[in-house]
Length: 273
Length: 297
Image 1 (cartoon, chains in turn cyan, orange):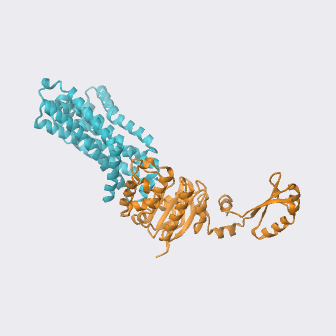
Image 2: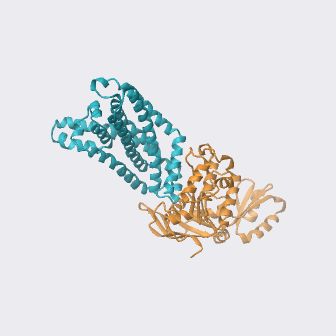
Image 3: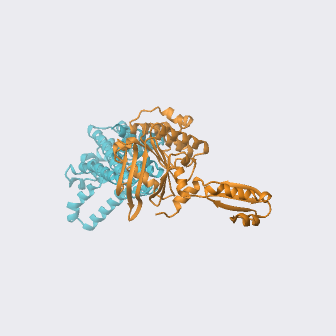
């Protein structure tokens, strides 16, 4: 127990010292503020408060940014130590591989959470101050922050998986970039193509929503949209979300971190440093 | 139960279809210092990783103080210095060592430990600013954490300057003095092997020799080399005492250790013909070459 905390606190120190924590927080704050101000125009037309619009814009942002930031920290987690030759030494100490991975995960997730809370929190505060906020929109903001952290957590574990699968930190970085493109961009494009080809048939009605929600990035989007009418209205993404039971997206997003962690742990176990 | 801190018996390991360790038997007793020599790829590092439980073996057995390699007990009792060690550049030496101490459940005096390896000044500097030798010293400091039953040092002299090497020998002696079984793997011959109690030589995954330095010399039956420099006529000397001309002015003969004095008397009888002589007894280098290169058994 104390061993995983020792690794976590050491990782946290590294994130603070190499400015990763500062840069990630800065990126989140800047993007969230920019979107909040840029997206404040349609408030009157839709009849919702500014914070709601802001949350809708930030949800779209987070789908791209949360996985990216998560992969940026996690790709190096195992391959980096292996590159430096310190992995064999670390594993010769009485900490199990599960403890090592869990320690890193705890630190990385805490760092992501900090960046998300400060970034979205600052933007939310600005939106609420200038354009007003209701209970609904505050809950939506809270949900956005929580789900963004969860989405980041999914991609942290997927980054560890890439890190364990690759021989060097460089190839882990490449594989993580590929992973990001597939999950965040290509997957949706592929589904879109399938829906167009299917032309409103069986696939579009029954299968498509499930395939979509199986992707953690889309599950994140669906969860945020479906849970708040205002946000869904502002983003125009209602029909797909309506076809699914309410538990589908949260379940997908909550299962993924465990799947990812188990897969990474499994591959890590086979590494001979 | 036994004073063998490390017992390796008849270990077999293959990588794919190729055997990388074959019938490896090697014991290191409490407080004993054993050098493990061999070329790159002879299986030294693989053997060390097997002892650490980082890679599986396919036959035979390894016991670390009667514990299975890789088990919690074995890990607590073993310390390891990897070859060409490096650490995360953003941490300081003190922080890195603190992490290792926490992982092993020890509460040592970190500052004293770093001073012991000569890093007192660099204590709170980032490892990124350390030289290769300093990183090696930091690696050595973590070996000294706690009181390990077995210390495995993989190429500990690489990157060290002569003074640091002197410190390294002292630290190895200190470890052995407190009862640690020390196994030092090396592909280069340095004085460190001469300062060990026993020398094991590996070749292509097998242990081809395991004896004291004196025992190895005796068994190898190596010859002493005598090089004679002629004052003007090297051919004359070669005719009189045999041997081989190696250049215009010198002749080299090789003789068994027992025949050395007879050869010397013969050489001095030549009087003024001999300008100078140079005697080289068989060294570690020759021993190593003998055991590591010759096809035996």
